[in-house]
Length: 226
Length: 226
DNA sequence: ACAAAAGTATGACAAATATCATATTTTATA
DNA sequence: TATAAAATATGATATTTGTCATACTTTTGT
Image 1 (spheres, chains in turn cyan, yellow, brown, red):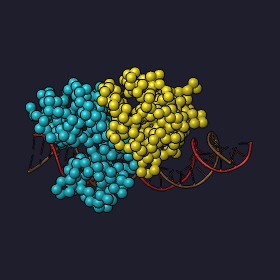
Image 2 (spheres, chains in turn red, orange, blue, brown):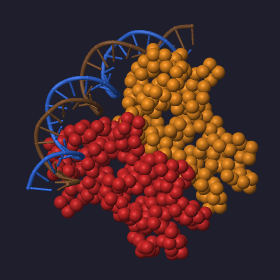
Image 3 (cartoon, chains in turn red, green, brown, cyan):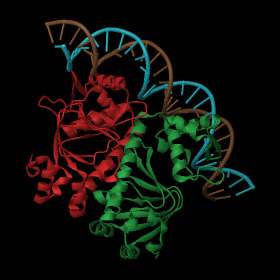
Image 4 (cartoon, protein in one colour):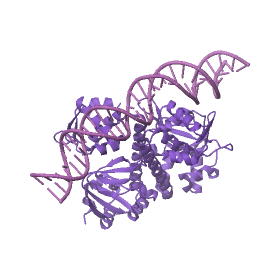
């Protein structure tokens, strides 16, 4: 069983407010999982009874709309926690969490977390601030969806992926998304997304090499995102 | 200066967890405001240094998108608190709050609220749960924006307005929104919204009498919203 | 290594939605 | 109350986006 004290990603999450004793407590009750690319950590409607701390790999939080299409609401990277909202609201999850890469996550039972809420104010403030930041992003995202064109949203999303997940040595985006997944972030038909990527490629603002994407003219992309 | 103890709307907000002593504390430091229809309580980018408790009247939380159009993110009714997110994140507000009706609101300084966070766990859990609920709604709203047609969103919004704000004796929706405001909730051009309302009227699912709207066939509307 | 499946790409077309013009009605204001 | 201003309504048209068909490319599994 891994020691939470030595886990670096802890430093990037609300858990950084926990002291040695509290970390030992978590280490003794947590469960570690390996999740393969494409597999779910949990699915919409499940009751999780705790939260997941992402140690390695990226996952998508998505929701199935009534027309059968998946909408990606957020991408979650190492250091972030999953399932906080449904734990606090005491409801089933309203989003599915599905691995985009092979992942390592730790499950921490609800009872532990709730105990920390009562005893460690810094911790609960951290959690609150995280959820507030999610709320702000969700509101901004909502406005983009409502007011921006697909082209603008694609430009915006490419810049977001660049800034959030970085690039490889060859300048290509580190995060690998299928065209369908990219469309699910943007909220458009897969063909429309592919077409626009082609256009961006032809006009030189990005380069497509297989499914690898590199941003060639970020200023132009920023202008296109408005 | 009004007594918070006797204020009924308190019971509907996170503030219901406060005890007598805490309520007296708030009563002595709060400021009451009357806001006229159309006036802002605060605007995007302002630093508020506290929260507002809505005593009477409804307001919209909206965000100006780069194309110059307003997007309404949420409607806030009596009993709800405003400005929690930016207070907790310690950031300027990212939304404007503008009265849709004449309003009465009370301003409570940040320092008071933060003190309660430290001393009253029930209160901070209430605030957390409210923000979690806002986050869930924002995610759902985002999926609607991305995946549903304007027609579906209009049907959905009309039902929401009915269920949330109720109807007058004559069956018309209590909340009065201009066509432009309704469009800003749905995220569409005003003309498109007007056109669809006309269609709904012609097909008998709603009735338009001046700017009053009544829902005639809620089941049909539910089907239309999918 | 090869067949099947999945993913990517592109054209043709249809549907949804926005924009612009203009008329009509309602509301605000001198 | 008269008049201007704002809001609502509707038509004509342009633009955006989705859908369906099909070809090509990459990945997967045996």
